[in-house]
Amino acid sequence: MHLLKTVQPTAGRDYRHIFWSWLGGAVAIGLLGALTGYTNVPLLMAPFGASCVLVFGLPESPLAQPRNVIGGHTLTALTGFIFLYLFGDGWWAIGLAVGTAIALMQLTRTTHPPAGANPILVMLSAPTASFLLFPVLSGALLVVFVGILVNNISTTRSYPLKKG
Image: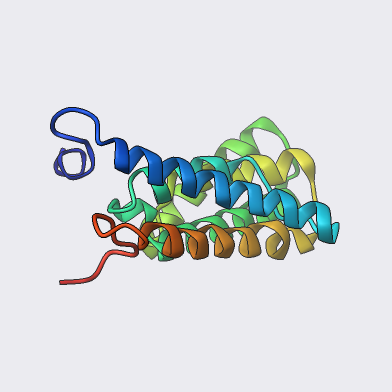
């Protein structure tokens, strides 16, 4: 309940916040897509859209911090690969992979809800191991990089959180 109090607006709409959230999400996903097209290296995956909701819409959330975005995506994708290799892509293995990914994010303090989709993505598409670097790690790094740039342009936003 405490987390909800810190990240939900208390009254009215802050149109400046909405603008910066829109700009950050558009730039991050647009850049991932453009770089994918330009380099022919996959950098874009659906969970990054949800990551942008947190990084740009709720940049003060603990779940949106760089450690969580990068660590959460990398750890959960790796979990998907391990489960796919050991158990195949059955429904029960996918369920166990997601549950394990959640537990590992909690144990490592890298909880990032959008990353919960990564084991499913890995297990249903069976990509090569390079998927961990492109798009998972490189894409997460780019989302965080754009988050640092865009969220610090405005004097009313700060990213990442400064530890006090």
